[in-house]
Image 1 (cartoon, one colour):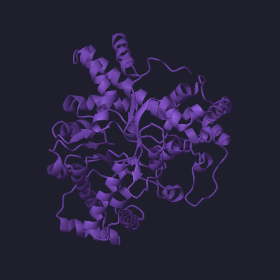
Image 2: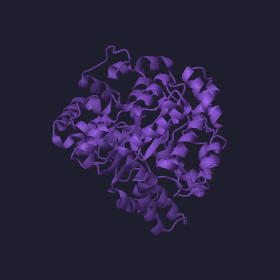
Image 3: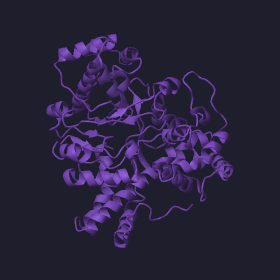
Image 4: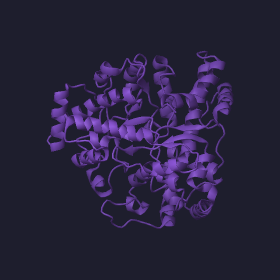
Amino acid sequence: MALDPNRLFPLEASARQLAREIYATVAELPIISPHGHTDPRWFAENERFPDPAQLFVTPDHYVFRMLFSQGIPLESLGVPRVDGGPTETDGREIWRLFSANYHLFRATPSKMWIDHSFEYVFGLDDELSESTADAFYDHIADCLTKDEFRPRQLFDRFGIEALSTTESAVDPLKWHKIIQGSDWQGRVITAYRPDNVIDPEFEGFAENVAKLGELSKEDTTTWTGYLAAHRNRRAFFKAHGATSSDHGHPTARTEWLPQEDAAALFAKALAGTCTADEADAFRGHMLTEMARMSLDDDLVLQIHPGSLRNHSSSMMARFGRDKGFDIPTRTDFVRALRPLLDEVGTDPRLTVIVFMLDETTLSRELAPLAGVYPALKLGPPWWFFDSPEGMMRFRELTTETAGFYNTVGFNDDTRAFCSIPSRHDMARRVDCAYLAKLVRSGRLNERDAFEVARDLAYGLAKKAYRL
């Protein structure tokens, strides 16, 4: 299976050679992973991963959504049910099913990530298939018994300089406290994700807001107390390493309402009487409130809009959130972001990183916005576009208008720990390919290409996320 050393580089010989030379200077740079969803408990307890299926299949929605699309039940892949009902618990059986259907991932980023992990992390140079399933399972399972394959040891081996997890506003950050109190030097920080106390349509919204009040010792039945509770929790997250907040809203809508109107919307949200438009308006107002708080506490504001999450109501009821049924939607940014940008967008002290799932907005809306507002930066291709073609389209559609330095490098946004090196490797290869083509077509000098490559691989993420 040995990975092609020229993968993702240009086909034209001169550009390919230059891409290889640029890549050689960034391939081993430390990894800055400023946004993701790995489990901080792994690094707190540093226990061995239980088995190959629990490492590669059961927690990875990129994997099980593809298998489900071919009629394979999530229960047979070990995905837990909301009602605690029966699911497959035999890791080998899950692995055999995954292996027998591995051909479904041909030409997908998932296969590139997994193959890279097999070879780079576990030293496997065969192709996974039904016939090799047990051999792969036995080899990986044996590796997982060894200390060098525990989470902290892999973290160090991967060359991760900083990694951010993502926790809800009402998370006690128990695992981060343990990490901070340990003698391990790995930098694992949190990010403030307040969706469940900002979105009136989030299940249990009123109960979540009450818990926010308990944790912050603020009266969250009042508008002023609710805002004070957010400030309190943001400070708590900062004390546990947070440098950013993150907001996964259905739209990019922002608002800046009179405070009495915002307070009235908040009261309706707590009572559960908001219309869909009022809920969207409240979310939009809170994005601007969060941006204003960022001017005080220096947290970077990330906006991940444009996903219709949990598209299947029946699967949501059966398995809960984040089970592969989040689907991109058309998204407006020009009008949607205007209230926030009118309020704070020209302030260079603020960093707002916007992600997209609607590629039509890149050259028409996002690159022109980021190309003029000091506070606005473009997040890297996200989710369905975290792919070689998606990364290349992103550079082609944004660079002419926004340049490189109104973007923030790369983040992997992953739950699958072993995919972190492979995802960063993919991004570095695509960026080097793009830079080589610019040089060979006379649009960038070679010296600048080497400097930009380092910035894209390392420097921009470190700067943007204040790491």
